[in-house]
Amino acid sequence: MRYFETHTHYNEDVYKDNLEEVLKKARDVNVDKFVNVGYNKEASIKSIELADKYDDFYAAIGVHPHDVDNDTAQDIYDIYSKNKGKKIVAIGEIGFDFAYVKDNKDNQKKLFIEQIELANTLKLPILIHSRDASLETYNTLKEKRAEARNFVSLFSTK
Image (tube, rainbow, N blue to C red; front, side, top):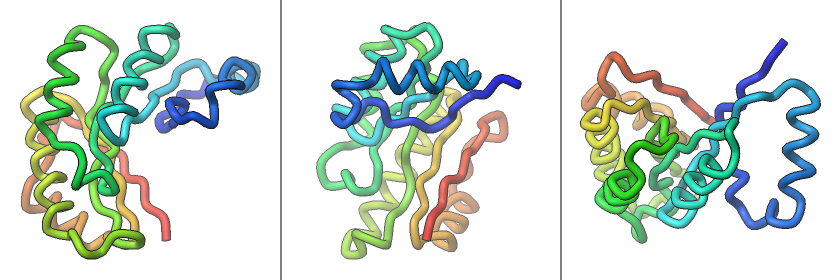
């Protein structure tokens, strides 16, 4: 059996000294494709760099709710535009996180909708982060749907 890892963060500093070892272990157990997920401008750029470096890597680019006050959907569009034709396969990790940040729910919703609209424009699927925000995530997706041709992956923890 072959495996496709759809949500990695090998763009984080914790992997800078041992990434090759970690990837070898994954490949040894038949993981043969990876989607490395961005969560802000810097992490999104690093995801693209990993997709450039490794044949079996793809990039998702987006702004996580933790970075709602730092980065914008326009930033993600600019990154996409500068890297058009590269292995960018999704907009994400986007959505809500009310477990750690509760005082900017309106800003989280605005950015989530902007990134859904960006994904629709680019005809890309979205990767959703939803923590302690299931109802808000559902209602937002009901209000502003990702287009039907887009695959939506839901990651939710309590």
